[in-house]
Length: 160
Image (cartoon, rainbow, N blue to C red):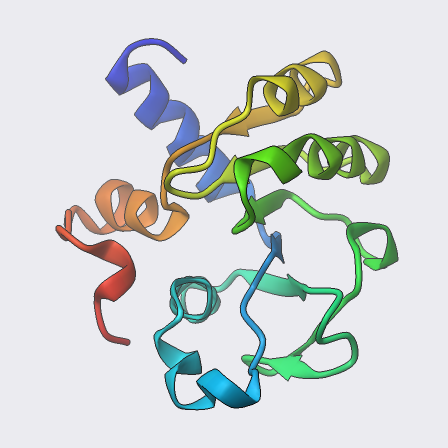
């Protein structure tokens, strides 16, 4: 994906043909931050995607069995029992090669790394398996830009 319009077309196709998103690193409620849980970017993005018809599966080993946005939290990608189109990652860049290997193992179609996240090794792992790679982009903002024709300055901070 080199030029911007081609990249937009590819992302639009990904979002239009995907139904199930595994969100790795979605925030879970912790006692010390319980008042702020609904403001966490991953929660905002998860709720937004659900409102537009996506099935979003939260993946967080520290909250297994709990519910986030009405969905049961899964420990790891291998434990998801339905096909996953997009793996949306809210984890540090250095953790993404392991997540990329898991994406290959479960047959995901896209590895999507949120703002500020990019890793060449992860990119190579998924490319070799013919899995699409998107990095350093907010899936919520891309949806807004490509389908709703809006371009918020702070996409993760927009209220729901």
